[in-house]
Image (cartoon, rainbow, N blue to C red; front, side):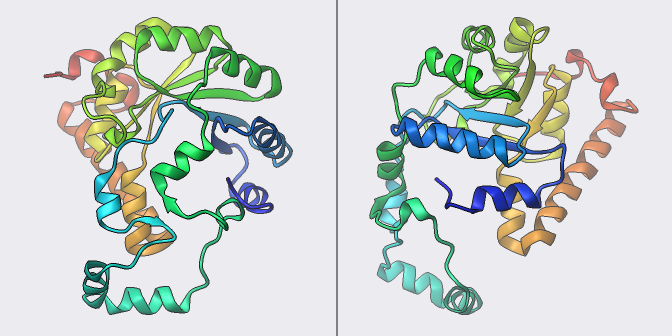
Amino acid sequence: MMGTTSLEALAAAVPAGRRWFQVSLWRDREASRDFVERALASGYEALVLTVDVPVAGSRPRDMHNGLTIPPALTARTVADAALAPGLVVNLLSTEQLEFASLRSWGGTVAELADWIFDPAASLADVRALRDAWPGQLVIKGVQSADDARAVVEAGADAVVLSNHGGRQLDRAPTPLEQLPAVVAAVGDRAEVYLDGGILNGADVVAAIALGARSCLVGRAYLYGLMAGGERGVQRAADLLAQEVRRTLQLLGVTSLAELTPDRVRLR
């Protein structure tokens, strides 16, 4: 859903060797194919297909708070803005971020997701993407060992165990609790990553101990970005690294390689 140049510009800004790009399956399959081709031409090495949001979750608070596209100003929004005049000045004095595909859109984020994304994604789509993409193919949103086996057999090089941060479906499986079974099912054929619920370094250590190759972090870096821009993101990463080291020290191990499942206790 990026503009005509933003995908390429982002690729140029990311160091070589760490170029992953995340996509979802769109209803407009021609646009999806074009997007994949542009990602390949821009030098991305891995494509991450998100499958944990077939439709948008119910978010009544977004509606109540006016979080639509474009945002709706309510009396509460104005009152909140009055408490943060610096943010208001920044908003009014900074050029707005614009996405080419959203210029004519009006509605909630959930309605936008339902309009763009195809809820009928299947293993056939994974196989088609495997045929079209020569690099690493990662499937994000796996929530069971059976699904992990299915996508790996369909051509995935890695899976990301994720419930989308718990923001889509209440009572969805907790990724950390599902991790041992997924690793046992596909860990010898594909890399297993964990996403969701990573709020500090101890969470990372627990995931690695249970067999995850690494973790994807969303909220921590976004908090840092909102608070301090690029320096805020670096600060968030530094804090996570410090917490990982401290947790390893408290466990009495000298490296991540020494972590074993017996170091973790699940509820």
